[in-house]
Length: 262
Image (cartoon, rainbow, N blue to C red):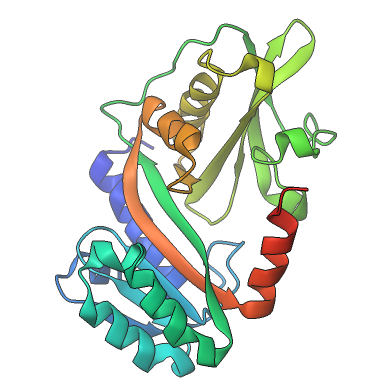
């Protein structure tokens, strides 16, 4: 399938609409939208639906998909601040405080990237690159490749590209079939091989492989993960939407404990 940038954006909008239980055109409106979250078999597989509170912006407005207990607080919040301020402090403190009576805390914050076909091209890699399929990377579900592959949802990992220094795997980009039309890319490079263009070479080439299979690649990074954001841009991706999700206080406390440096 031959894509255009407009096609890619429309596919992403349709998927976000499935995920948030709204219409694709809702993300392009000037006014904010609040909808009741529902489960949907077509949603991204890693999402836990229905949401208690999930906010998405493609830059025009905020679409909030919520449980009924959060509707009033979220409606008030997104009505008080411009869309871009709703995803940053100090405004976020207002929402976090408003969600506490429901036993919720703000948790996931991320920026999502889509390929720009005017910039996407196969970048050179200083190491040999091999295409890997599930049988090839079955033994690679280890900590060093945890961004490229996800053991928890290993059945979704469908394709990968590995960079090799001789017989040693030193970089890996993998993609997961998170929904029917879009595959998410993750990438890892061993510390001693970074800043050599390995990540961008693998990411750009994998994106092209995904497009050749009739799917849209997408890439996710935290705003503070500068290395990951730079890789996305170097690889031919551009910012498309931002997302903010609240989870239970117990969930957030568990994540904080796991991420604390020992």
